[in-house]
Image 1 (cartoon, rainbow, N blue to C red):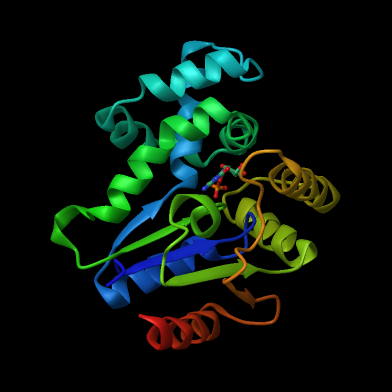
Image 2: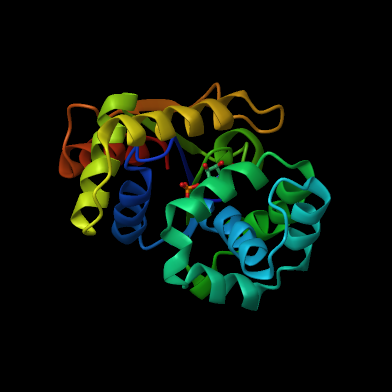
Length: 217
Ligand code: C5P
């Protein structure tokens, strides 16, 4: 019997984080936001003044992270800043970084903390690389314009004054980096169900996802 794992992948601002949280709550499963791990690597490098474009430094920073470091850095408000996200996108293209974070993610999926009956992992390569045998794989997406609009509204909500063309250009640049990198690019697994929520609200997306999940778990 396969471990009850729900793999949720998709691009930035696709709503996969919100969906993963709701699905994990509904099923009583443990949740791992794997993007936070890449952000933690970037943040630790920013804090130590390391060069984010040096692959050896990035791999070393990822290998040096302990579970305690991960807990501390992922709780840091700076984790959600745009420069941390951009740094995460850069370090995530480094093989040594991905390898260093692989075991942490697999261990979480195999043995979810808190004695949970299953795990939900959200990221970019959960269905393709981290948990290729997951019984449920969702690929959550929306048009780049819709995702840029969501990010724009989120930034304004935080009191920032972004320009929409800049936000859209950043989103396109991050999509291109994540989709075109040589290692673990952002692509749906062959057996993933693609859910496009461009025209759906959070509740509709959740219900659609739960139908797929119930049919497969
Ligand atoms: O999802 P989030 O915006 O927190 O991810 C930050 C960056 O981490 C992404 O742009 C992507 O480059 C990288 N990432 C990844 N693989 C994952 C999760 C995130 O490469 N499983």
